[in-house]
Image (cartoon, rainbow, N blue to C red; front, side):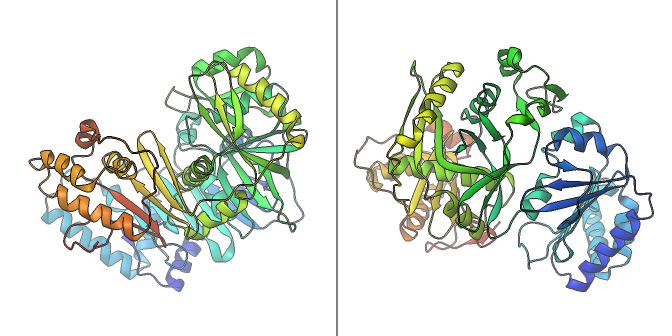
Length: 514
């Protein structure tokens, strides 16, 4: 249930109730997280949080600090329903909404509903975001996530602190760090940074592109290291791009762990992530290779190929576009910030004036690492041209297209069926040929031709149809059509709204907020 009509004083009162509630408990410990450009004070009301915090934040965790910028309060309460009910009793608007919800569910004879589900409440403050809640009561699961941006105070309750279940939620406090680090000159990034001889490499890639394996193996073999997953990108007063680490953990598949076993002396197992497809390890024994405020000198776009040997070469214009789309889309999908066009533009501006290289990875991971070392030894002698950045950048990975308007900071995401149609369009397949092929789906989706026309109209109006010099024959993938229920989908992440652009009703692109 989303609540959007609370005023500032009502929201402030909710924060006050939460704070009064947790301070009824005894304060157990205090630590400070040094994020370089920000210092966060953590106050815990439960001893069991400490091992989890120490294992993940080993490198940045400090016992004391003269100053701090933000405060994070954490506690472990098994049943948060009484607290949520107290907040509701003190707010007439939420109370009325809950009563209405109960009547509605009873009238609809909703049977599989526990009491807690009715009290899963998200409070939106449109001053900060129209999509992300400022306060989130996940009563069923026992989570409270609250962000008091005005006072730089944050609140987090987790009901289950067992390592497997807790780590399954992801890197500890990552959503809070994302909010805290969102300044004009800094941002949390989902990516990887390693380097050699003080020359930092920012790997621009989505998951399963080889960046984590390459980063971890390079660290194990003596490269300087910032992160293989989440990190901080920030600019100094000279607009130089720097990177800093947050976490002291890495995640490896069981297969990769076995391959790297001999190099991982002293690495400590943390959790199987409750899924058993990934192992989580603390790598504090390699802190001598960690670097703060590490200068980024180039971006590398890695891709696994079938070649026997690795290759590094300057990116083409299209490849640079793909790299930027991947680091932006990967970061903002992880942090749920896809519709923040100002954050999109900030990340683009941070990296666009660096040299971009394409790294074709072979299946021999040792070869890849040694080839990268050789490349970095001669990096300063290279010409290192800065190529322009396309106004419209396209990446198609795992059969899904993400299109980025780099000037406006707007991301467009297509489902597989729409991606398949889009590829036909940019391969200069005539519209009438595509329509002729789509007619075979009319018995599955009688609106498919209208959807296609609206799709093309959107692409043209937003200048998203990229020219492809090489014309190809038409190919409509039946499997993608089936997988997406014969529906074309195109989502625009713009001005904090997720807008489905392919909406029937009017041919002139009627928009509908999801």
